[in-house]
Image 1: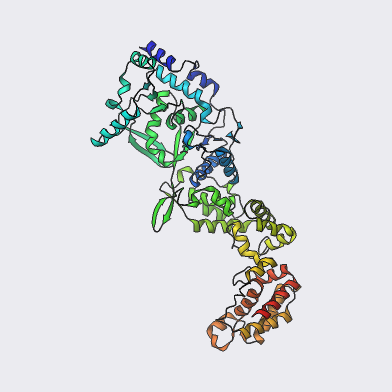
Image 2: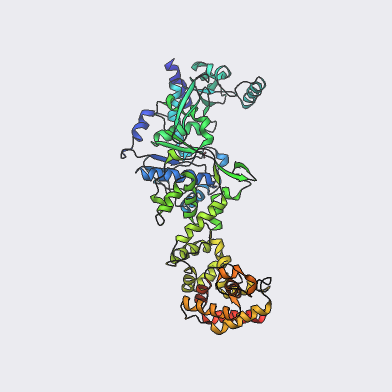
Amino acid sequence: MEDKNEELASLIFPDITETIEDLEKRYPKRNLPEGAEVTRFAPSPTGFLHIGGLFGSLIDMTVANETNGKFIFRIEDTDKKREVENGVRNLITQMRAFKVINDEGLVSETEEVGDYGPYKQSEREYIYKVCAKELIRNGRAYPCFCTSEELDRLRESQEKNKQIPGYYGMYARCRNYTADEAIEKIKSGMSYIIRFRSLGSHLKKVKIQDIIRGKIEMAENDQDIVIIKSDGLPTYHFAHAVDDHFMRTTIAVRGEEWIPSTALHLDLFSALGFEPVRYAHTPTIMKNDNGSKRKLSKRKDPESAVSFFIEEGYPADSIIEYLLTIINSDYELWRKANKDASWREFKVKLNKLNSSGALFDMQKLTDVSKEVISRYKSQELLSLVLDWAKVYDKELYDILNKDLDYAKEVFAIERDNAVKIRKDIAKYKDIIPNTFYMYDELYEKDIKNGLDFNLEKLNKEDIKAILNNYLNIHSSSLDKETWFANVKEMANTMGFCVNMKEYKASPESFKGSIADVTDVIRVAISNRHNTPDIYCIMRVLGEQRTKDRIKKAIENI
Ligand code: GLU
C-alpha cells in the first residue's frame, strides 16, 4: 500500500525529490530572543491596500518590533485572477507611506530580503509540491478527478437535502479510489487536482486559543479541501500552513473572516506534522451608515482604500495614531500622558484588542489628525506638506515654493512655541482653505464677491468707521498687548463695550462688543470670521499689505 502511494506520489510529482525533512533543514527554526514574535502581512497583489490591511500590518509590525522579532511581507498571488499590474509595487508604496516597514520579505516588486523566501507564493510552487507529495505518500492527500459539473451537482443535491455542503466523508468520491485506481486514471489522461484527506469529524469539537478573542470552539474539520489546484498552485489554506510553518511565523494576525477556516488549518498543520501557529483574528473595520453598522466597502466607501487618505493629505502619523486608538482602547489615555512621544513608544496589547467590529469614524479621525498636526513644528509641517503637494496639489506647491521663508512664517502662526496652538488643520487639503488669506492672489480670488461682514450686527457705516479708525492706529511693530490695548481704546471711544461680561449684561447700552470690532478687522484681512490670532496674521502679512487690505475693504463696502 505504501509502495503504491509512493508510486502515485512519484507519478504526480516526478520532479520532486526533496522531502519535508529537507525543507526543515533549509528553513530552520529562527534563532531569536525568547518571546520574539514572527508576524507576517500577506495580501494578494491587487495593488489595493484596504484600511483593514493597514490595520493588520500595523499590528504585525508593532508586535514584531516590540518583541525583537521579525515582520515579514509576503505576497499571496496564487489566485492569478486577482493580480493587477504593479500590484506589489503599489502595495509597498502605500505601506511605506504609512511607515509600515517589514524586516523580511519583499521590499520591492522584484527584490526581497531574508532567508525564508521566496516570499511570493507563485515562486514557492516547489515547496508546496514537496509537502503535497509527502501527504500523498502518507495517504493524507489524493488526486480528485471530479469535474466541475459533478461538483456542482453534488452541491445542488446537498443543498436540496439540507446537508452540510462540501467534499467530505461519503460525498468525497475520489478519496475511495485505491492508489492503483488513481494511477490508472492519471495514466489514462484524466485531469485532476489534489485534495487533502481529512480524518476529522464535524461531530467532534476543536478548541482554538485566539490571542484576541480567547477560546473559540468549533466543529472539527472533515472537509477534503483542494490543496493543489489544476494550475499547480496551492489554495490559500494549504499555502498558509506551509508558508507559516517554513517561514517560522509565530502569530498569524489576520481578519476575522478566517475564523471559520481555522479548524481546517489546524487539521492541515497536524497532517503535515507541523506545530500550528498562534492566531490573532482582528475585527473587521466597520462604518456607521445611518445608524447601522456595516463593513467598509471597497466599492461604496472611498475611505476603505488607504490611497484615499494619502490623496487627501492625512499625515501618516494621523492614520496610524487613529488606528492605534481602535487597536487598543487605552491608547488615548497613553497619548494624554505622553503628549510629545512618538506612537512607536506605545506598547500594543493584542489581548486588549476590541474583538467586536472596529468602527471607523471619520469625525474621530479628523479630531485625532488635528491633534497630530498641531504637534508638528512649522518646519516639519512645511516639508510634509511640500512632499505631498508636489504630487497632489500643484497650486499649493507652487504658492509655497514662491517664497519658502514666508511659507515657514505662515506655518508658524499659532505653532512652534505659541501659547495657543492652532488645531484647524486635519489634512493637507485643509491648508489652502485655512491659510489662503496669507497669499494675495488667493485672497483676491476669495473676495471677488465681496467681503463677508456680519451686516446683521453692524451697518456699513459702522464697519467703515471701525476700519478707518483702525487704519489710523495700525502698526505692525507693536507688541500684542499694546496693539490690543489700542484696539480696545478705539472700540471704547466708538461706543463698543470692551468687557464681554458687562456687554452680555446689557447689550442694548452699546453699539456692540470688542468681539464685533475685531471681527470686522478679521474679515477685512481674511474674509473669515474664524482664523488664528489676527494679530499674528497681520504681523506676518506686514504693515503695507495689512493696510492695503483695510483700505480696499473700506472702498468696497
Ligand atoms: N491573503 C490573505 C488575505 O488577504 C491573507 C490572510 C492571512 O493573513 O493569512 O486575506
